[in-house]
Image (cartoon, rainbow, N blue to C red):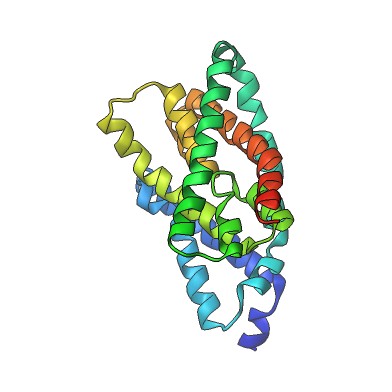
Length: 233
């Protein structure tokens, strides 16, 4: 009976929603303590249960496909705060584009270079390349260029969590109080997790995080597949 339950798609979808809801409650009760982020807390029981039930990740991913699909509309919905704060963004657009391009190139090249130095194979390097964009975009890129889709998604999540954990400390050390800078940095380096963290700081911070997430995704998705396919051809 238990084995049959583990193979039911609705079981994993329902369990994922339950784990996230419970972790979200804990996150709010902890007053948004970063280490209690739902992405961290909810992942632990799911990973343990997958290991215990001897189910592979492919089955879990297939059972929760509709949840992954919702990431796309969620990213598109971030256009709303952009429109609301466009008067703050427009005067800085040229500088924003310049910083985004330089930061995206540095993040991608540094990750691939480090992987090459450590001796990673071609497929792993291709999976590392899109680590600077949000999960749905990264998975689409890897699907085109080749690589491990699950590894790419995992790397993006780890990068997002580490960035969201470390950013407040870095902002404090360097005395960065400008919500525009804080938001743009979180969105560019920490993707969806960073953007969610930025909205906790305020709507202006969240708007600039949304802008960074969207622009970085558009730029990397347009350029990276061509570069990767050319480089590894």
